[in-house]
Length: 552
Image 1 (cartoon, one colour):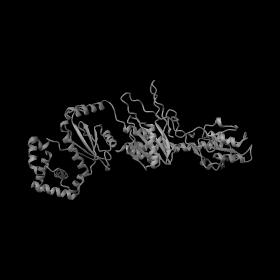
Image 2 (cartoon, one colour):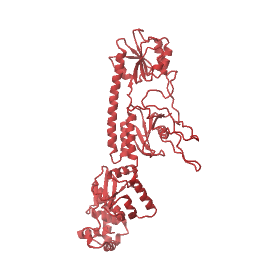
Image 3 (cartoon, helix red, strand yellow):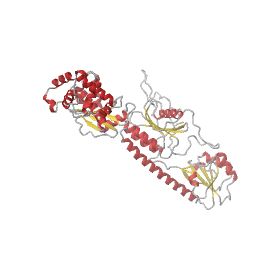
Image 4 (cartoon, one colour):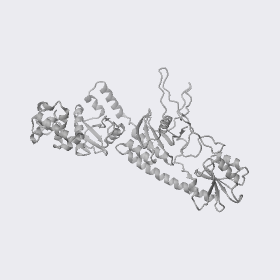
């Protein structure tokens, strides 16, 4: 069954990591020797007791040290030690016994409890001091690992693709684990690492429903109520206590359910709904993998799922850092600006034009930015688009199916700087009525940026500037329609000619900008020259065509 990790009962700092029995036995100065039971165990602390029944005084996970002062029934003694959850038993030879009693050795073998022989020169205090020293070293390693992971995750969150980068960094810090960001419906939004087995994958999806239970559909006759929340025993991630009550049989251990199905609280009574007890995180094991699910903050009902081959001290803390960063990266910013955007959208849907709703979104002119990621995307990436919009200072972002991100900025965005991992094309500032034209110019700018391998290209062809101001726009459009009539109905020819002229007749860079073969560019330009009956090697002809293309 999944374990709910209740934050209310967890300590404020990560608990001290356990020490392996093998590491303690490796301390040659102690002279310890395992003579029965499993080869290794996790030791969480050391306790010395000469009580005939130490059960009431044990918390679980101890290395229990005794000289057997009141050892009368070894079988009963070991059964009680095991029932209390002790990790191992250390028996001191002398002053009561010259050797470890054979009956005690047999009982430890039968119950699966590691039995360690403590030679006469070794004091119990020396053993306790060695354990605390090993714990301090392990804690230091854990804190250093967590600190390095925090730095790596924070750096990943600043990348152009922050969400996938955080997931990749998380899997690297968890020694090759698999991480997935799940939507409220359980669909994967982003993944990183090597996927687990199908059984573990299905179990992780089920575990995600523990921290994000499905929302009930309200009926027409009753209001919506919170979904029944799974219950579980709050268990800190590294406590040694068993998931079940102490057992009295040999080698007690729990048996995981074949299909984790968390118990739910009873339905709300007529007096009122029961308080919500959904945990923030939960853990389980399936298919040989350790599974963990964490609910993200922000109201999006997203869940971080992690599957790893093993679980180490500090893993839960590292995953917690990733949860905080992912929550910040995926939470939409609410406020007055969001209300204004919603109002503008409503007015557009109800028939208003862009010029009418533009004042709701910002004052002054508008700038359009087209951005292409350095790595070819498989499709639209809304999370990366939102991160780019945040970096540019705008929430008006559109991620197209082709992987291009369009950002709309209010005002004259002359302070836009190149963004790592992106190629940007920036239009000149325009009024809201000219936004479609600015969108086209931003697209041309980003193509030019790709062709010239520049991180950012600004559109400087502002309509009405320079020599173009000597004639009216109507006259310019009429001239363009007449001069370019033979190719006006072919977007491929006009786009190729415009790009080729903007790149000073470079075949290779035009091919890169249009994502076509250079021979295709040559054929199209030759076709343009033939249809226009123009010598494209003539600088005056090129200038005249460039002027006309601006108004087409």
